[in-house]
Length: 253
Image (tube, rainbow, N blue to C red):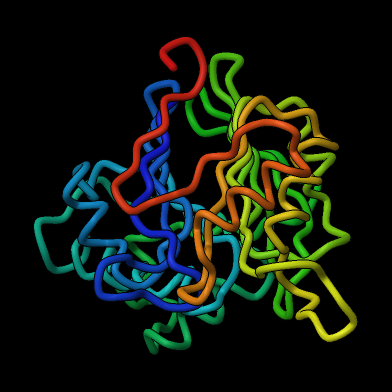
């Protein structure tokens, strides 16, 4: 399994880092997980967007879903590709996107995408790959996702605060890609819908994962500090997501 970071900037893109988006290649399948601002062009530099096996959107905040419209334009009016593309997303997501596109039932938007609403606890199969979903704690319906193929597994937190299904979903995963939006220790004033780096490390340790990669750092968070804070609670070195970084997971690490 191979994970390529298309972008990982928390909240918004920066001049050098798109928002959240990840390319996962596993078992002969190609998945685009989260389509944050700026990630479609990065996706296209790594693979043909018209050959995607599926798209997974963790939630409907702009920094995680807006570039789905870039893929829409590519498939409907551009070079095109194999359609419809399966898109897995949380409750209300399909309606939200269609409303933005002003897409009625007969609109071309619905001919290039095959939307499937998934709930925490659901599992779906895409070729040789299995997707399992858990609840994330966020102001809108949101999902954490586990990707498994050939006995190798990657779990992605999406955006979440404490109290999610993340630990159970990530149990014994080969790699946990976990948001670490907040710096320092949590206090009463801390935003409840994101994790600190220390909490990301705690989740990884509780789930007994092999590797932890922290992501979704906002521009005010120092990556070196986040790495130290996450490592202290994980009990092992922690890797930091960077745009363009490639992580081999499993036998070819």
